[in-house]
Length: 317
Image 1 (cartoon, rainbow, N blue to C red):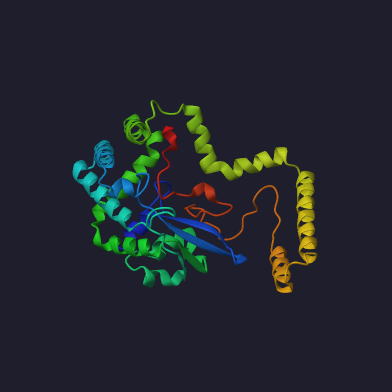
Image 2: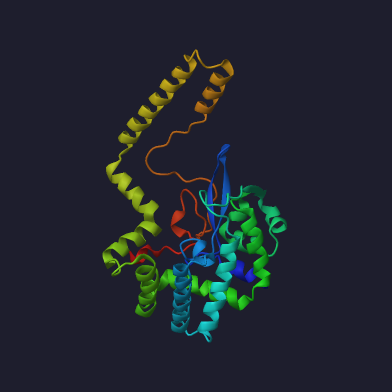
């Protein structure tokens, strides 16, 4: 039960989880869908906010713990201060396991590709099937794990960390994500920390801007299709694709006539050129189809249902 409960909770809409699943296509074979797993699990801007001894960041951690205790108190959790400390400690362990982004002092770890059925053996402790099957992700032939060391630590933490701490952690993410829509106490607490303290904002964005952001996040593809139907008719798409084909043809002739290129290089260039797939207008989808009851998979056609690993604080901006 302790292995599957966090996985089941991560299927719920909004709030996100300790990692993000992105669905795309294999760069080496555009007809093959792949799932890409990316580290996450922390709400502060980056891992240094949890790990640095710099006084300003230490102060932010204290204020973050106050924020967590506040929302737990509003949610009527029995021991809000204890839960806040436990959640901060858990996020700190996740931050320590995260691989620094490119450009940081530590070089990022190369990712790896795994058959889905091997995830449980490669990263034991987390119930990958319970998380993936309701979303249809288990149908992906391969899973690209962007930061394998992080996922090894995360999966091991699942059975180690008390289930009540995971519940508090998930609660904090859900309350943070939903606070603009439920009650003023939560919305005010969120703005005070993520808006005023972290970014120096004086006041929240007006409601109409938040409404536009909400529609863009959850209905972006659908609204985009309506826009294209109105402003990008079929004849325009035909013209755009014709121009694109002419560009490809011109490049093909340029490669053929490049006397300075060795024959093998010309052949490789022509081969790569032949793999270009021309598209115009709305995205046609493809790849993995998400389960309609969960909508958690991010793909070219179903991005509206995603639950990001880090809460978007743009509601306050």
